[in-house]
Amino acid sequence: MKLTKLTAVLCASVAMPAMATELEVTHWWTSGGEAAAVAELAKAFDAAGDKWVDGAIAGGGGTARPIMISRITGGDPMGATQFNHGQQALELVEAGLMLDLTDVAEANNWKEVIFPQSLLEACTVDGKIFCAPVNIHSPEWLWLSNKAYADAGIPVPANWDEFVASAPALEAAGKIPLALGNQPWQSNLAFGAMQIAVSGIDNWKAVNVDKNMDVAAGPEFAKVFAAAAEARKLAAKSTVQDWNQATNLVITGEAGGQIMGDWAQGEFQVAEQVAGTDYTCLPGLGLNAYLSTGGDAFYFPKNDDPEIEAAQKRLAAQLVSPEVQVAFNLKKGSLPIRGDIDLAAANDCMKKGLEILASGNLLPTGDMVWSPDVVKQAEDLMVEFWKSDMPAEDAHTKWVEILKTGL
Image 1: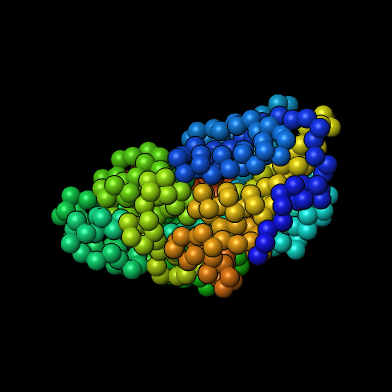
Image 2: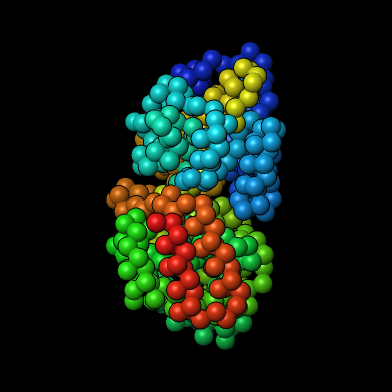
């Protein structure tokens, strides 16, 4: 499909600026692959006549979000800021601190081009649209080092069960079976991936969508906690901190695998590794082919300056434009939020994701179905579990009690 010219997209929503307007944009994309992706957004914004002032905050979303929220509520708002899809910015929207983008969305037909529609629904409060989604990130992937398995003299696993079975051979070859960083969200992400992969999609929906606590306390989720306890053993010798450091263990063949989101692709690309040749990717840990529709969106704090507001709306329109969607997501490793663009340049892993997306085998993320308080309590539990010898049964019981507080 021939893509619409970027200038046409912008002009459809807001007039081009007579002179550059600076916008500070805060985000937590600081790894090599992430930096390459965010550079595409900055390049496009600057080329259209404005100025992207980068406000990267190191340490991931857990570190960045409190800083972002404090600035917005404290009267020192940035021009735009990243949040994940879900309820992270809901209180800010309800407090009247975020710019209404409904006119931009209507001028650029967001309801017709954004897919799945749940992404736009996550931006909508009381019928008004307050954010521009930029990608779909599914966190439930198993990334495997083909080199590590060649060194160990065994085949690359096809799923999580085979991965667990391969651990003794990896350890005999001096490898870390499972790479895992010490940032709290990483252990929570790994557990979330196991929830669907091990318990199955129907059981996950029963607990997280239908809020069935009998299923949550039942045998299928007992299997999830048993798998998490096994993974804890496999990651025991992984001592790195950041997620991309754990990814590098896979890239260099020092570790067999990593449970991480599809943003890990950006790191493999920066290292000039080829999907299917140097590394293998298994969505749903190879057990259940699905995607959860997480990802990133940009919100625009209200500003009294009409020039700033106009620039904010230009950036919002641009983030959803076809050209920016292609350039950004190819570098980020994520999937686009439009169903009408050409991704012929996608690698094997992205093509797997696109196939699942087209199949409609999609689920919401945990922070779309549970309150921030429940999400935080569950994350704290996972941190405690992964850093201790807490029995799987005890963690399971505590987890169910946390979920009940969100009913």
